[in-house]
Image (cartoon, rainbow, N blue to C red; front, top):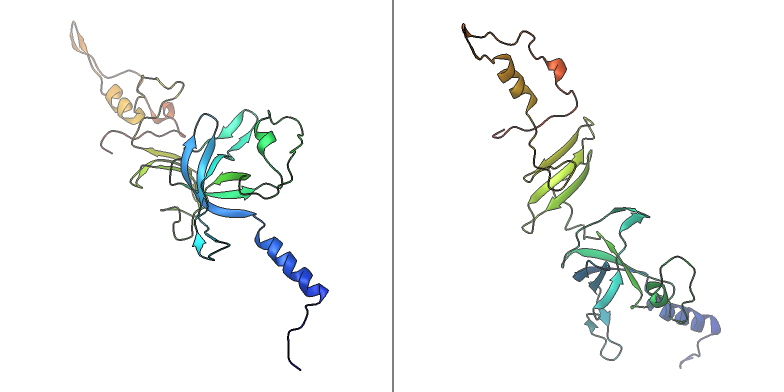
Length: 232
């Protein structure tokens, strides 16, 4: 027996659910187009294309404007990342409209006053979603590292905890300033100073003096802090 069969109710429901699920936005990779440091929002472009409903050709989605960026923060403590155009991020789409929440102080529950759900305009930006083909370079799996690269991709500075040794290391071509951004007093290199101090003599009325009566020893040097000398 040939001819078209009328779909049963379960088939209709399955297709309706499939259509609804296809339009449900949860997470997408994206890249930053611009970043507003003042209010910490970003304009982003999804890296997923979407089929046009009329032509069925995959097309870029429109840029998403003023999306909140999810920095790691609790109260007055935060880790802030220097977000730049081209950085890769993840987009999470909120269950409800974020409009009223963005206009609030974020302290008390608000009424979204909108029926939209998982909408393209309600994206949250989470930094750091890169393709496995673009991994973090020069990673030691035993270390915890904070690395800052320059625009060419070269390491500008890095801080790490050595997983094998437990050492705390700061590598940088720039200055390490302690206490204030404008700190200007330079640190003394302990071993070099000890050598100079122990060999020190000066003129007296009866000729050159001898070296210090109590020479400096390694007991006066730190066992925990080491500095790099110029040229090392």
